[in-house]
Structures are given as C-alpha cells and as structure tokens.
Length: 320
Ligand code: ADP
Image (cartoon, protein in one colour):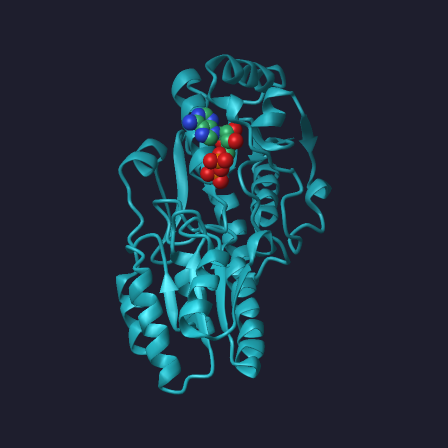
C-alpha cells in the first residue's frame, strides 16, 4: 500500500472528521500518500479527488459533519459507474480506499474490492447505530446527547402545561437511539421498530397513568413507524389532553462531536490504515467489548445481526 484515498458516504455523522483526520495523519506517519475524495461515491465517479496533507485536516477534530462532504449516489450500483470510479483512483496511482459510512456505503466498498481486487476498508459512521459488527457507530453518542437535551426541554414544557409529548427520533430501522434517549430522558413510552407497535395498548396505558395523576407523558418513537402528528391527534382525542409531536429530524445529525465520538473516530481511522498496511481488504472496522475488531464486509452485511437490547426495554418498563 502506498497511496490511500478516503471518502465519507451516506448520512453524515459527528465524529466523521476525527476519523478522516485519523486516517490522514496515521497514513502520513507511515509514509503513505493520502487523497481525499469529495462528496462520497459521487465525487469518486466525477473525479473530485485531491491530495491531502497534514494541515488539510487541521482544526477539524471538533467540527460536526464531514469536511469531505457526503452524498447519496444510487448510480454507484451500476457496474459501469464503478469501473469509471476505479479508473479515476488508478489514474492517481491510488491503491487502496477507506470508506466511512453505513451499510449502503459498505456495499459500494465491497463491490470495488470484489470486482477489481481493490483493497477497501469500511469504517462505521452514522448516527443510527445500525451497522453490524460494531457496538457503536461514529456519531451515535453525539446524536444521543442531542436527543436527550431535546427530550429534557420537552419535559419542562410538557410538565408545566400538563401536556403529552411525542418525540420522533432517528435511527432508520434501528431502535438504539430511541431506546437510549428514552431511558436517559425518562420517557414513559418507547416505540421501536424491533417491537410490534400496539397503538391500542399505548393509549390505554396513557389513559391509566393520567387517571392516576401523572402530569405529563413523554413518548419516544423511532422514525418510519407511524405518522406522529396523526398519533398525537388520536391520543389527544382519546385522553383529552393536549398532545404535541416533535420530529427532531436532522438536528440530530449536526453539532459538535462528543469526546466519545472523537476518540472512536480517531481510533478507527488509525486502525483502518493499520489494516491496509497489513494487507487486509474488504474488511470493516468495529468496536466490540471495548476492543477494535474487523470483519469481512460481506459477512457483516449479509449474516451479522445487531442484537436488540431487550433488557434495556424491559428495564424501561419498570421505571415507568
Ligand atoms: P449509508 O451508507 O449511510 O447506509 P446509503 O444507504 O444511502 O447510506 O448508501 C450511501 C451510498 O452508498 C449510496 O448513495 C450509493 O452511492 C452507495 N451504495 C448504496 N448501496 C449500494 C449498492 N448496493 N451498490 C453500490 N453502491 C451502493
């Protein structure tokens, strides 16, 4: 390995910059040349590639988002598009690629590795924590802090006004962000995609607790499960208490990365370069039980499942 390129792809996440910096600085330390690809696979195809130096990644460790930019580029599923992308890399003499992103981004990396024998390493960067083979993705902890802060604020006003609040939290099909934020924020009700949503049961529970004198109810719901505004209307009609839904949305993607994500990004970035130097290809980086690990990308995408924290959900029922 002599020339390594790096890109960020899919949804951006706080801490991606720390990972970029980790890759760039450790690669330079090992005597490699480093290239940055702008706007993910879109930039790879359109040849937006630039050599990076030590100072190219100065003052980014504390910044949210990704200095390289990110993009959705479904065209990358087309083999002809990937051929052009690899040709672009080879033009610079680039011989390896680090991809920071989620499952979708891993897919692109896997295909380039398989089809062209072009060594790629994946680093999990997404606030959703929905990547297999790692306990945490870069950005999850920061998004969690953001969601908890929002819940705290909604609690103040819900409690003052004797109101019910529904908070829609991101995570795609993964309930980790909702579950963690709900426990930390003391939400009474948790709706995640890993569990069948029983609306009747939810409304009955709320009715009972309001009848018992509770001043407010906080309901945390993962995105894509139901229309939270319609749910708010339904609850209001049934319980006869003002009910508001708040969709946290992209607020959760931004902001200063917390220390955990900066450290995780730095460690994973350095580890990815170590793997390339060892001659590894088609691997994805993870952290499991505090240790950095790597798995086959194909295996991670096809066979590995993220375990759902049943015990956390059970615990939340007892804190109710
Ligand atoms: P994430 O990486 O966060 O899961 P996406 O699923 O949007 O986000 O994937 C990011 C990008 O990865 C896509 O826009 C596309 O460029 C690339 N990608 C996704 N799926 C594939 C695939 N099956 N084959 C090749 N490239 C893919």
